[in-house]
Image (cartoon, rainbow, N blue to C red; front, side, top):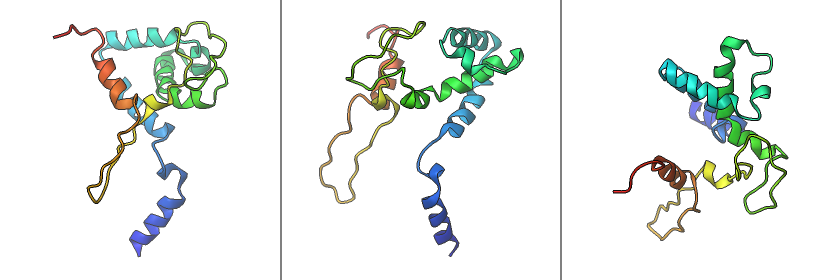
Length: 148
């Protein structure tokens, strides 16, 4: 009976459907506390250059601005889904935002997740769409590395 109640509760829970901003920010908070002071300072400097930085730190004390910006940046891919300054992939680009590099206003929806095909009976599956989070992470991991 307890299992049935749990399944019903999870079925009705919106947050049970997917990872949400609270989860992103919780992991980001843990990650933000780990780097050396020098690395954290560099991250803070980079985030301060983002065009949305003033919005991210509005009302935040000076001492907490780096952390607040890092947490806001951790949900940025989700935030821009409904931001009219950004456009969907393969759509007419929107007006440039000063401070963002060329191409940064495409939402790149496929980069945020992957669908992993599976089957319970061994039938052939259709490969997941490319690019996706896995292919992009592999690509980004190799940036700056010398070819072997």
